[in-house]
Length: 362
Image 1: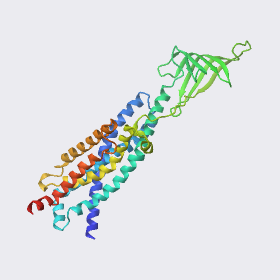
Image 2 (image 1 turned 90 degrees about the vertical axis):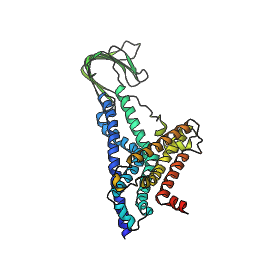
Image 3 (image 1 turned 90 degrees about the horizontal axis):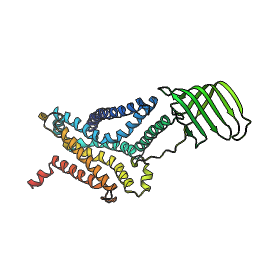
Image 4 (image 1 turned 60 degrees about the vertical axis):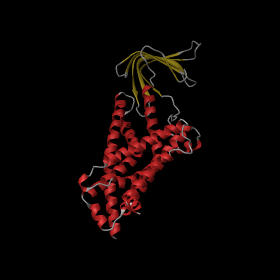
């Protein structure tokens, strides 16, 4: 019963610290991303109503990066407080060993490793593709424009030609417009002294309203044209459909990476496998790294934990580049990096358990 209470207490402390660290780091990373998307929205490259959606989808990708380091720092912060308040000393006096400290944190790490695997193999690439598609599609819709001042512009493989002499600063008002349409359903020419256009931010459709103009309907080469004068004439112009193709390996589906034999795809696959493994290895490192005397303070070992994580993540990044360049065999992958830090974790655990001291004494 006492063990269950202790496990729940340690689990609660570790989870609370992990949530706090994750929230702070996620807010920092999203703020930089939000500034970038905000500048795109201000420049007219991204509709404002999509801003929060794009940032929210980006958060799913950032969680994949943050869970390993936030778990390491969260466990170290939780145990640092327990060491500072001498609660660990009290637990040790009651017979709680190193295994008793590990048990709740291993449970937390297994749950987060499962979440990380889901983010790494499915949710992360999916959200990245959605964000990439939204940004590219928004840029396409904004950049698509049938009118350019003083220039004839063909759209629809030459089925329509648009011309305007001048446009207002916000491109909403037009002057001296010429439109030629060559379509099986309708063929003719439209001229107007003035007009205006409005853009649907979601579909990219442009609604064009012309005023004080003439409409010529007929077959080229024949003289029997029908001429109609109008006060107002409306037309809609749809943007061209574009097939979206993800141009980055990190956005590819996991099944596509498994089916590919390209070194870049194999490197991305090994990185995705590394994410949940890193969660488990870092929690093994967190417990011995957080050991401190009550006088050293709660944050005494945090710098050491950050340093260990930076070395770990940089070696994984270097290994990924090595696989992509063909310098590291795909069979070896990034397992050598995990082996190094697993060996370090086991050595620190053995030191904390007194195995080296007993070995020297014997």
